[in-house]
Length: 121
Image (tube, rainbow, N blue to C red; front, side, top):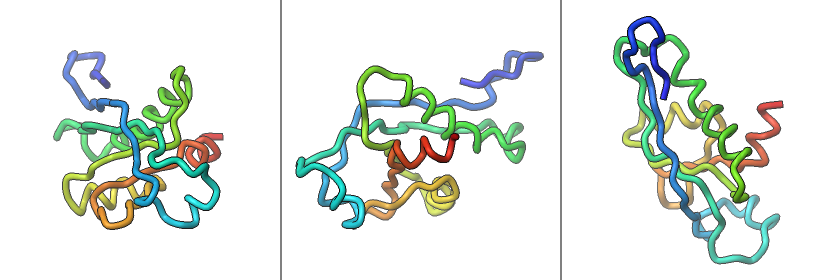
């Protein structure tokens, strides 16, 4: 959660949950580099929201990076962050941060942790 310090008002939040991605749903250029498992471990961003009065200030853009930092420091290793975008605007938002759509699921996007880790450096 991000809370405005002066007022205590909730500015933004996200949730994370354990998930998996069926390997056939990943693009072939990625699967050829992966072990032959039926699914790959992932962390799903369940909700990501910014309060109306805080939108347009860049806060939403910092949330995916914070998600990734938490995933990188967590004990279990995962292959990717996963998100179900609620609409086309949300799809565009996540694509700006490097997320890719799953095959046949245009509103489910993923970001390989290894790729994202390189972007954070």
